[in-house]
Length: 287
Image 1: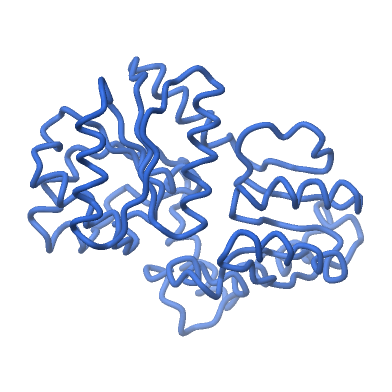
Image 2: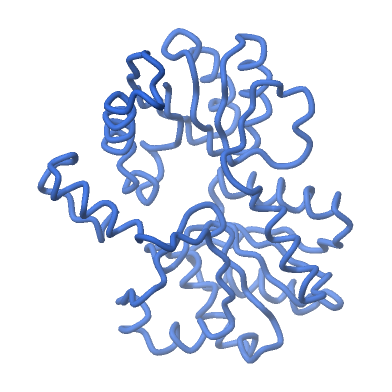
């Protein structure tokens, strides 16, 4: 199984430890005959290029390394990966594809589509007008464009799609565009969560607080939390505890995440560490 992602160019994604995670997964798979069906599984980590064009061309080498693929994380690459996987007759497991997936016959979507979940929440609260703000990296720009197209196809008007980096003036300009647009209620943030160290989101939320946008006028929704179970039961996040402005701004954030009722991600990783399934030096709270 090839595990694809921009591991070498995104320091926060690198913290997901794809090599450790994939080794843990195949080790458990190989121990369980009800899942492995007599096959011996192995995994190889395939680095996805940082720039979208290079990421697409890099897919051509994936066929020789794996009989099945997990990823890629860039939605612009996902369509090409799906077509190639179909031509190769290899399964492609990805949660990053956005929009029309017709013709991607071997694509397996392993969880509820994030855009579909977001659409359901927006419909429930009757929040129709949406802005999508992204980090400046190719991955997040493609996520933002793909999400906007997906929501528009579902009937929601997405009037603003723009990027904002770690500079305050970038965040200010993006938020001014939101303020100038008519009727926007929700701002979807396609960037790393500030709870995990996302600097762009910290700057954006702090600037939104300065501009009076966190008083209930706007709802800020982190997109990345839709794709994994963000720990939220009795979990201290130092970034909020140590930053009063950010903590106040975070009152305007609505987090939608996958539930993990039995055990949190950090607890599951700690159990694996105690069972000597992962290296002893790994701190689960830093993953």
